[in-house]
Length: 295
Ligand code: HEC
Ligand code: HEC
Image 1: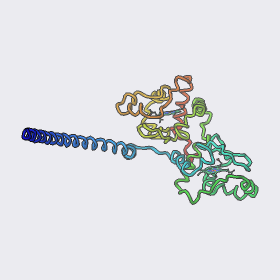
Image 2 (image 1 turned 60 degrees about the vertical axis):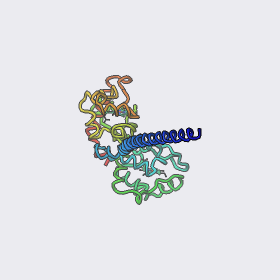
Image 3 (image 1 turned 90 degrees about the horizontal axis):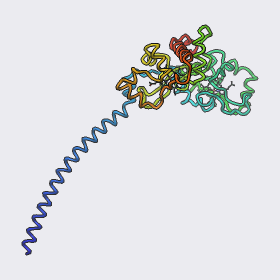
Image 4 (image 1 turned 60 degrees about the horizontal axis):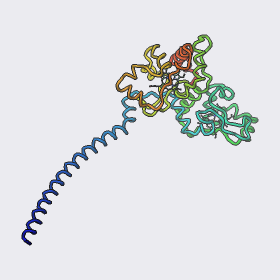
């Protein structure tokens, strides 16, 4: 009896051993496959994380001076006093106006006469002619908030980017009245806040997660030329919020659907004349006769 039990134990342990060996083999194979999978996942993930960098290198990422200036204004704390997007409104007790002035809606007109005045505000806290005025100094001294002098905090190139941004967002760069459609387009564009998405005067660069280049395109240069190849495409963008050349493209379509912010289809809300006027105005911006006014 004891022999039988001993033999059974040997057998079962052998069988167990064999079983264990087989498990080991299966585990080794499983581990190999898992490692492989991990490597693939890691490669995909690295690729994904590197995508923004790769995109920067591979795609012609457009950055206008005004788009850089807007980003810089955020980094330099300008919006803490001048309000979100420079819209003004931060309370300034003790000052004549009661609040810090805006960069937008033609408010700059009351403070600066030229782009040199804008530069002097940034570098020295105010233009020389104002700093030398006794009255002005007394008034400024009475207020809670003061415009800082950024001279030791910014490079010469950064000042130029800030000037480009401040002028582009001033609301003072407008087409004349010679072309009625362009002039009307400018009014409609302001009413519908095109520049909230497309950047100051269409300078572009407002971020758009999930989109092909990572930002909302502007109207100033290459991005526009890539996206708008004809007047008909321009009309489709404005009326339908999309063009078939992109939505039907395998890669373009994927990014089109994925992006967080999409171009609204204004054709459903505006009469055809307004859509046409917007198109004329966008083309006026692209043509760039205003460029000397932001330098
Ligand atoms: C601590 C608050 C504060 C900060 C920060 C600040 N400003 Fe000002 N800024 C003011 C005040 C107050 C005035 C009004 C001065 C006056 O009445 O002359 C002013 C005026 C201006 C003006 C002229 C008026 C206008 O709104 O167009 C410009 C241009 C300007 N600032 C640009 C900037 C820029 C660019 C930055 C960031 C680099 C900046 N400011 C940061 C407080 C500030
Ligand atoms: C909510 C944000 C938003 C608003 C508001 C907006 N757009 Fe757009 N627009 C976009 C986005 C995003 C794209 C790019 C869409 C894409 O690639 O699928 C775009 C594309 C365009 C294009 C194609 C070419 C280019 O370079 O941008 C034009 C032209 C355009 N918009 C004009 C306008 C006008 C004019 C208005 C105001 C009436 C306006 N947009 C308002 C987000 C917006």
